[in-house]
Length: 152
Image 1 (cartoon, rainbow, N blue to C red):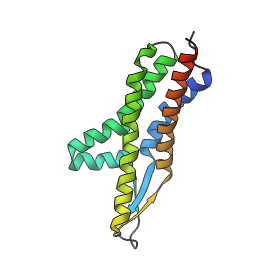
Image 2 (image 1 turned 60 degrees about the vertical axis):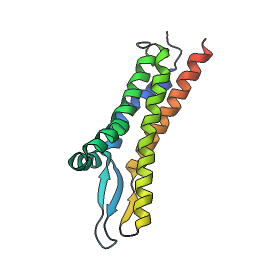
Image 3 (image 1 turned 90 degrees about the vertical axis):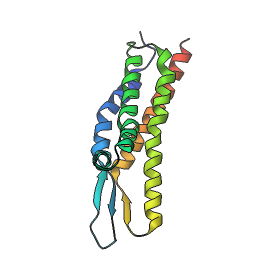
Image 4 (image 1 turned 135 degrees about the horizontal axis):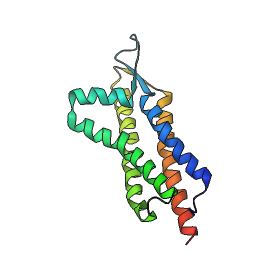
């Protein structure tokens, strides 16, 4: 029987539903000048634009924003339900660090755009949801490792 509590398992499984919502949710609203209306940008719309203009960057962002956090969450679920050995936790920890990189990139883009002064950028609820998912995943990983070490 797994030493991981049902609450931790349920929170991790909830991330499998929340990540796709966060990917489609507006991260920010951007416009060229304050007089024009703002366009909503999500992870998915941002990736669509990248695929049209820079395939390498699109691959990198797709890895960090979609695959790394989702694979980590699936891996943790498999560990939680004793379908994968806890020995994979260091690999899942690395995936978590990769997933955090996209939050950093978004923050850099917002800072740069605001510094230019030509456009207007407003953060939207999706950025907070996406950040919360990443942080929740980090917390769940930490709690998983803690629970497994306490059981030894």
